[in-house]
Length: 424
Image (cartoon, rainbow, N blue to C red; front, side, top):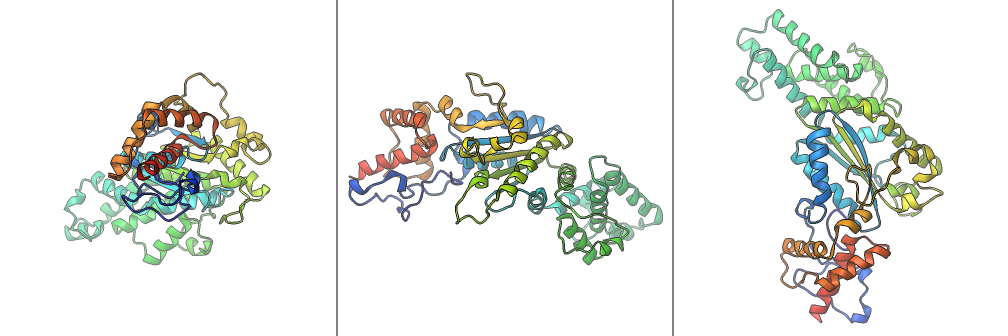
């Protein structure tokens, strides 16, 4: 499903207030134009809040914020609302003061975890977090960072006030060592790089601009950085690879927490590209790369308990499960870790494999379906469209039980039919 509740665009969008033209016999709901303008995910919560409110309370406000870590998988048929769910949870995570990262498997290689780490690093804004750490250090030394004029470094402020003596400088070094190098959650090289970068923010120890850029390039795994250049700084790191990238991610999550955030919330959509054979896709997975991706996810699952304040959510079409030859079931080491061992009569909101089709079958009653259609119309502010009636909502619920399309998209298609009937 698209980022918003929009319909598959087989034709040019219909202007606001306009009706579908042409013969009713030519009308094909599966190729219908978009009838609703793009709407923000956080405005469309009807029905799905049964799950999102639970995640917000149990995970974002409690478990992850208190130092836990988690991996969830979201699946369902085409049009079941997977992407919308990811967007909505990302919006909620931002409100709960999380650093959020979102990307599609169609754009980022997943077989090498280093690629995932690099994408996460680039979206996180580590310098913003280190600036927050520097403010904390200033407070710990008995100064108020708000007293420092904008644009002035801490060491210059100390010198201006006759406090930039050797003893104070030694205290800055001691604080940096305590904050970074003595933190067991941080990789030693990662900690040293962050200590040096924070020192550059404070103005002491001095770090030249080109060396600052070198450290940032190393942190994001840039292969153009020569390790010999870093050794000149008294820094002896190894390169970031798929073998140590998860360890580096743990360090990054800790820096984000130290920067005052609740944690790190990451969503990865469109995982079904692993079994796609379309020549139109930007990335194409061979069997070896696909298995490497499954193994990478398996390793992340096994390592997740060593991390803190981090939550991953992967989303994919049901085909990735149903395909016995190339899907997740073809890699037993991963499938054994994510399959549901116990299935009850009620949808389990704690489950790590979230089936949005099963969720919809339980929660999307005809009354809820009508409410969703009303919500769509209220947000689109269209006077020409009509919500679904009880008969149409019941038909959507019945079709969802046996069809290949999820409830959210079926609602949209049904609303197209209503609008067409009004026009004709």
